Each structure stands twice: as C-alpha cells, then as structure tokens.
Length: 565
Image 1 (spheres, rainbow, N blue to C red):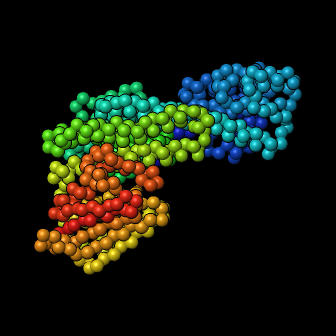
Image 2: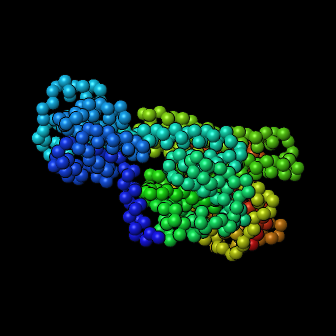
Image 3: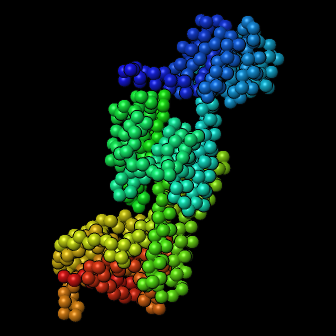
C-alpha cells in the first residue's frame, strides 16, 4: 500500500500533465537546454516545458498531448534541422493545434520560408540566431500571455453561456427533482469535476438524491440516508464532517480512507441554503490534481449553488402560495379582487426580478460584455439585488402565513423602551444617512414591556422602513414612547411619526391588507413586497396590542403601536 507521502507525490506529478505545454524543438541538445533554462523563469507555474530534438518527435509529442487532452500553448522551433524543417513542422502543428503560438528560431532561413509560416501557421514571431536573451524571454512571455488570454476569454464565454442556459431551464421548470439534476449537471460541466453528489436534508437527516459524473449523472429513485452509505464508495468521514460546515469547505485535508483508495486529490463540500436554512449539501471531487477547486472555481460553484437555492425557494414559494391561497379563500379572502392580487404578486413581483436575471444572462452572451470585467461585476450586482427581492418576498409570505396560523412561538421577556429604540436606530442609521433623513427618539418614561424582542424589532422596523420609504430627503422620522390608558388598562404607546407624503383618506383602511393593490413606490423609487405592514400588525396583535393610524396627504403619517404593560 502506498504511503501518504508517495501518494501525494504521484498526484503532483500527474497534476503537471494538465498544464498547457510549451514545446521546444531543436536538433542540438545544448540549444534545447539553453532554451529551457531561459524560458523557465518567465512562463511561471502555468506551463509545462516539453523538449523535442526533431520535427518528427515534436509531432509525436503533440499527438500524445492531444490524446491526453493536454493543451499546447506555445511551440518554439528551430528552422534548419535534419529531416523535417521548422517551417514544415509549424504548418503541420497549426493544423493540429491552431491556437498554439508559434515562434521560429532561424539563422539562415529564406524569406519565403518565413512568409509561408506567417501565412499558413499564423507565426507569432521569428527570432534570428543568436538571439538576445531579454528579447527572447519577452517574446515567449508575450506568446504565453496571449494564449492564456484567448483561452480565458473563451472559457468565460462558455461559462456565461452555460449559466444562461441553466438559468433559462430553471425559470421554465416547476419540478424540484429536475432542478436538482440540472444543478449537478451544470456544476459538472463548469468545473470538470470527476464526481458530484447532491444531498438534501429533511428533518435534520441528509439523503443522497443525485450522484454521478458528467456521463452517468442520475437521480436516485429511493434516496438513501447519508449514514447508510458504503464507506468503500463514499467518503463518509469527510461527508459527515461537511454537514457541520456553514460555507464551502475543502475536504481533502480530512484523513478519509476513501480518498487514498480512489486517488482523490481534491474534494469540497458546498452547503445549500433556502430561506436562511440549511437544506442540502453538494460534494465534488477531482482525481490527480491537487488544490483543483481554486478561488475562481469556488466562486462559480457558489453562484450556481445560490441559483439552485433560489430555485428551491421559488418552488417552495409556489407550494406555500397555493396553501395560503387555499386557506385564505376559506377563511379570509372575501372578494375576487384579493385573489387577483395574489396572482399579481406571483406574476409580477416574482416574475419581474426573474425576468431581469434571465435578460442579463442573455446579454452576458455578448463577447464584448463578457470580456468587460466591470460590466460583468455590475450585472452581478443587479442579479444579486433581483435575487434578494425574490428572497424578501418569500420570507414575508412565509412569515405572514406562520403568524396567521399561530405556528410562530413568541418568547417574551422584559425589555426597556430605551433598549428597543437604541436597536432600531442602530439598524436604520445607514438608511437614513443615505437618504438624508433625521431619525430621533423621545421617551417620556423608560418603562419595561414584556415582548418578544426580535419579533417586536421586526414590527417596529417595518413601520420605520415604511416611513423612510415615503419620506423625501431632508425629512424627519421620530420615535416617541409614552404611557397611556385604554379602556382602563395601561399601555405603552410607540408613535412612529414621519414628515412624508402621507396617505389619502380613502386608502387608510386598506393599508394593512395583504396583497393590496394600493402599493406605491417610495420617494426615491424604493420598492417593497407590500406585506410589511400586514406582518407588523400580526406581530402587534399577538402581543395583545393594537395599532392606530393618523395621516394627512403631504404632511406625513403616524403609526401608533399600543403594547399592554
């Protein structure tokens, strides 16, 4: 059995074979040794050097590299050699590896020979013997850089095209199993990983739902539990450790017998989140190449995993909306117009950001855009914002559904008003600074109230967020706490006052409705889900409190939250 050190050494040697090749050809061994010595320092760690003492041997090396899928990046060839001359070699090499940069070394080559190579083999440059070292090194360095740039742009275009195709399929899909299979297929294509496993979690137990490589990827009709898998065919020790990780984790450092037996050089796990909850895990592995999953690859994997998580969220949202619609139609929805608003939310509030993502994916296929890193970064921000919009809507709908069904447990304890106000100001300070709005507090008596601190912050935060949304620049929002009596009982009244655009009288009684058609954009074009006030009201009601509203168009709005003391 190989030792761990010998095993690692073999992997390092095999990893070298996957680097692009700089092929050097000259019939004099001493010249070859000189070329190798001079270029090694300028091509860095990105290339592997191969040497050939004849044109015939060079073609054999090229054929061998092609059979092993090893790219040829640069070919440096002498012109005058016994047998096949340099111009003939470079022209034949061009037919086999047209992207390779060709450099001819010549002392006596005729002009027509050089011209023929320029026309038929896209000669990068010819250098006269004896050459000047710095000029030679710079030429090789530029040739290598040119090759890497072209292949990198081509790879970026391939990746963007695949992302577009994947996002399009997801947008058209309503089947969770099919989406899971597409996620694994896209990641295998993008990363060229040798194996992919997708686990989904249910009741804190991980089940293997998809496994395989690019040619044998398949759904498992009866997903097995992680703890029942065969340790001979799965890295159980590494996978169990991965279930506790919160971010992408390299697993090859874990002493799992499976890795050595299967010669796995690189392995990572990727947690999948939906609505902030861990719902699954991806596992990827690569043989022969150590540290294969580098930062660029990890970023791609994270992007696709996020897209996969968003798909799970969307599918879950459709199911949840159907359930909410069914319950609401039985208990709360009294008119067809409200049902139509539910349809509007699905068709507009979800479809709009998804359409934006879809359109950006199409635009990213444009080579000019794909090669512009700043443009790609800007598109990435827009895609992230669109995904955040969908996630906010999903969270709001699920929060409201849970509140109305009584499935959320309130953990109440005593908190002073000053503690509540301090946290609200801390949360919203960046927002008011950005919009140049003053946010002030006033407490007549710092009383303690028994509340679920997190839930109350969510409710008060929704009112403050609403106030920021509808208050123009230079306006003011005030939080005022007073003790009041209502029907002979003591209450804490928290007033959220703004100097915003106000609410029309005929719309005041509709602002707490779910799926209301009276939503407006904010003074700076801000959008919302339209469910924030409904959620806030449910939270206050379940604290035993109530809300009143005062508003005048053009002069502002005050929401009065009453909490029992």
